[in-house]
Image 1 (cartoon, rainbow, N blue to C red):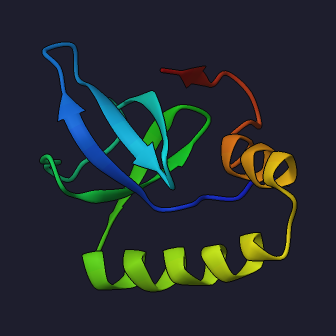
Image 2 (cartoon, rainbow, N blue to C red; image 1 turned 120 degrees about the vertical axis):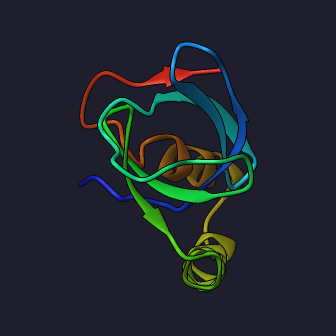
Length: 95
C-alpha cells in the first residue's frame, strides 16, 4: 500500500529537484510534474519520487498529527519502514 505522507520542502535546487522532510526522513523528489509554484516551507504530497500536489499547511499538520498517533503504537524499526515506504511503489531516491 502506498501512503502519501505530507512532506515539507526544505531545499530546492537548480534541476527542479527538492529535498523534503517526511517526519524526520529527508529525500530528493522531482518537481517536474507539479503545476503549482513550490517554495521552501511548502507541504507537498509525493508519489513514486514526484511531487504531485501542494497542500495547505494546516491540512498537512493535521494529517501529520494523525500519522504520529498511529506511529506511536509501533516499534521504532516498524515506524521507519512505514515512513520510508510512503511512496515506495517504485523508483524512490533517499538522501
